[in-house]
Each structure stands twice: as structure tokens, then as C-alpha cells.
Image (cartoon, rainbow, N blue to C red; front, side, top):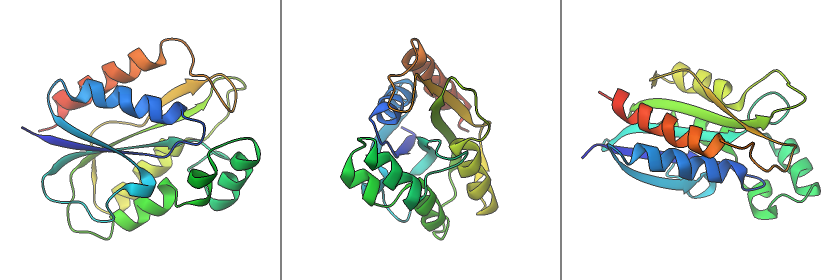
Length: 169
């Protein structure tokens, strides 16, 4: 069976919930491993046919050490906030030779509607490293910095994951 790897960064738990829901959808057609970015492999194996990356949108893009430190001041998980984020992992994984198809998602505040997207930034970096984007970036919305997720977003994430599973060739 085809294999997917879902790598996520989550400060307040919302992005992790979305990652798990996406994985549920992917499991309709694939074997799936879900790992936090701090435990993600720095190099992908050839068995991975779909790489899914997800993280929170911080300051219009992927988190940086300074934005993770700000999140920690707001009550985010301290270990996650002080560890490497999706930005650092994406740059590292691009140095390996495996190039599975890739999709990306992020979580961002619904209101006020702000520009920028961690998912778009991740896809841009991965494309530059030679990965093939399967689809455009997907945004999932939270109600305020800490959440919770907006109603219906987990169902939407499951549906998106299932759709991604059918598009892997």
C-alpha cells in the first residue's frame, strides 16, 4: 500500500488536531505515519510517496524562533516553542534525495483575515528543493491565536486528506 508521512508543528494543539484529521482522510487509500516536527526524520526514505507538512501561520509565514518564543509567552507548549520548527525541517529535508509528492496545510486565525500562509511558504521552499506539489496550499481556521478550531474544520481536513490520497499517482 502507498505510504504518506504527515509532519506537523503545533503550538496550541490545533494544528496537531488538523494533522490527525488529514491522516484519517489519507488512510482511506494509504498507510500513514504522523509525526511532530521535532521527531520527524531529517531525510525521507524512498517508501514515502506523499509528504504532508502542516504548521501554524506566524507573522504571515512559517514560524521562526522569535515567533515560537512569542507563542510560548502566550501559553504554547514550551518544548515545541523552543525546538526546531517546520521552517527548519523543510530546509533540512530538502537536502535528501527522496522527492515524494508534497501537500501543505496551515492553521490561521479566521478573523481578522490576515495575509500570508505557512503552507504556501512551505510549498514554495519544497518546490525550490525539487518536490512536486500535488495541490495548492490549504488553510484551516482557528478562532483566535489559541483556538479552538472553527466548527467544521476537522471534517474539512478529513475530506482534504481523502482527496489528496486519491490524487497520488
